[in-house]
Amino acid sequence: MTTAGVWLGPVLWLGAAAWGQTSAPATAPTTASASATAPAPVPTTVPVPTTVPAPPTAPLPAPARSTVPVPATAPARAVPGPLEALAEYAMAMVQGQSERIGAMSLAESPEARRIADASVEIARAVGHLQRAAEKAYGPGGFLAIGFGSTLEQESRRFATSRIVLNEAGVEARVYLSGEDKTPTVLRFSPKPGWRIDIDSTYRKNPARTAARKHAQARAFEELATEIEQGRYPMPMQARVAGREKVKAGYEAVESGTAPGSAPAPAPSGGSAPAG
Image 1: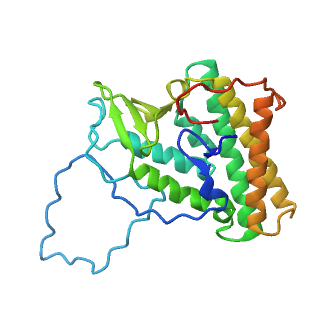
Image 2: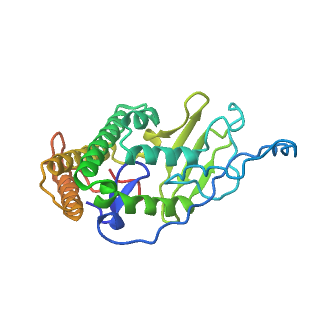
Image 3: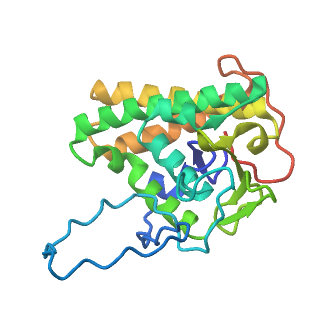
């Protein structure tokens, strides 16, 4: 298991803070958008409400940044930009929206399809884990077992992200935080919009990546079941157990003892998202 954290997808992962370390809450950056004409002022003869309900706060807001051009094939403001799409993918993962994860994944090769399927499996397991934690520990139980710190950490990474678009504006390479050397690659098409390009994002050892993702999903499913059985009276106990289960799953993949896995060669160079 890498010491950096536990990946939930190309973006979201359970880092050190999610397993017990504290972190300062991230400041919510402003959302970038394409330029638009300012609306006409409201006539003075029309009463204006004195209070306007505040819009809901997004857990992973897009950072304040220069405008990212939308491909010419898409109407202005018709779809979110690549960074917003990546944030949507991350939130779908942590909310257990497995169907959305599948819809936002672009996988052409058999190896990439296995990774995409494993990501859907993780999202489904996260949904199970969320329901189990909320039932066992009450509102906020899911955050208490490690996912609250994850959202804070991801907000900080998004705030320092960098996007590189190709000339056609249909491929985006997103570097989250200044530490990322290998980007998450997104590809645009008019109807579905921006999707995670699994083939381009996971070029190195895709079989190992898929196996690690499957191991992570199994660990989450096992943890959810044990929470439902009352094995962990306190959320911190479940958090520690989850860390150990994922670690054991990763070690099984590396040794070739995980279900359907073979000994995985050590990755060479780079910092591609771990499985």
